[in-house]
Length: 149
Image (tube, rainbow, N blue to C red; front, side, top):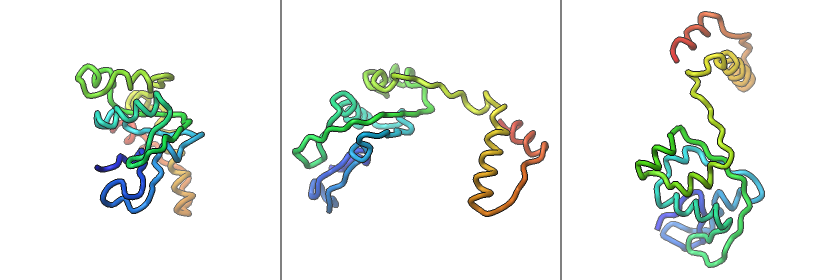
């Protein structure tokens, strides 16, 4: 059996499990876990995730002890999950468990006014990291970036 990386396993639970490993939910106890691209997870993992979200507990693979977790879950996807549900690829019950406070973020092509702000942010960030001094971008650069969306 191969353990899903979001969960955990006991030493000796399967070939290669040379030590007990805490999973993401266990590590996030009393905090927040971010599940990126939730629409991509396989159906078997969806079942496990739903069970953890409903019961707020799980057992490590190969373990007998129930581990309780208290986590805030933030999930993101670029897929339209209602279409995925209709196609049979995503569980409706998991969707409603995760979709408590939905935040729709339009794609960047629909909010081009954010491009200068994002450019300024990343320019400052990487200038600091790389110890470079670049004052900003030219209007031509900004125009080119906006046109390419």
